Length: 266
Image (cartoon, rainbow, N blue to C red):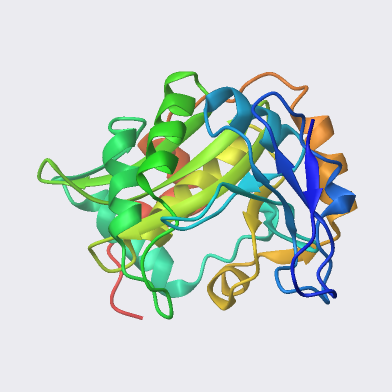
């Protein structure tokens, strides 16, 4: 049975500590906006494919650093990107055209998930010391991938992985996790490909978890957690998505005439 413990700070609410066989608490028990860690729901438990599936089905995700216990979160509001609202800025459109027309470049799906998540763990991020994609996270999500519930979108150039992202998908509920790039606009191209897969498969929302200026620039926005959880409940009951991508998929974002004709710098 999960037990509650109280921090020495009397303003901090109880936090559920999970035993291996415990269910997750209801998400409305997550810490609120006036607490030290808004969205924190529980600690402990087990980090493996089965528990990750249970968590995501309820709008919960793990996030912790090396040396910390497993921490489970359900933020409110929730940052999401609706594929219909994705902003294909001019510079990104140019980058996609350049990538697609390069005979040495290709976009792959699920070619090397382990390499993608490892690269995401090593990506330097402003204001972030270290990574939350610790070894235990990598092992659990790689198993989740083997079980068919985690996927990678990858950019390759001359046989080398240069950018990508990984996500969780249950039915048509899609949860974005992390991105990396070693080339200009690489992670944005990967995100555009994920958006197009979601459009094609009629997945109406990509979970982004928390608000960042970069995500807002790309068209993401916050919604109440209650709405997000209701969305997840509906979408996980739908058939799985087709995780594949071909050149023709780009034409739903950029018209074929724009993809094939020469374009001067704008």
